[in-house]
Length: 164
Image 1 (tube, rainbow, N blue to C red):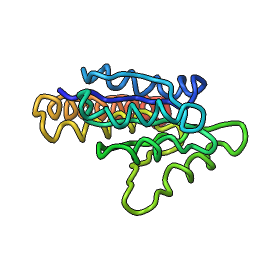
Image 2: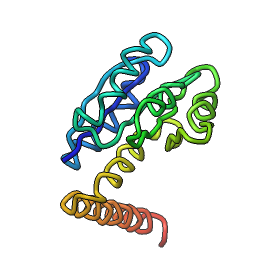
Image 3: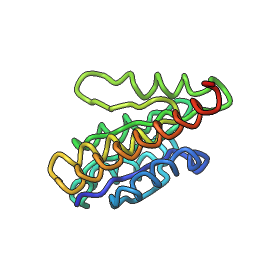
């Protein structure tokens, strides 16, 4: 199975990124995690992106806040799917990162999830990889069924408490 690269622009993004790590681990998807900054370590970020396909990656998650150029910098150097996670900061609550991540020029796409949307980033990677992996597709379907069952359990609890 292809693995997922998870790159964060700063170690301060780890609390957000851990949700993607946990989601991938629950689905038994291999991953690698790194801290590379589009601005402070551009050469390392570029080298990672250039070598990602050859290193067995099938998709890359790039999480960054504020100017949030990491996903675009990674996408500029690979044709693998890149999913950007805009991370919130104390400045503009992540709106700056969202706009920086989503507004890519034609020819260099970045799929972008919501601010701090690490779970959806991991699930999007899983869906991409499941196109050629039936076992993973089955695990994703099982997760959706379990998620739906959990919602219905909560519905029953709340209905029992309030619907007299």
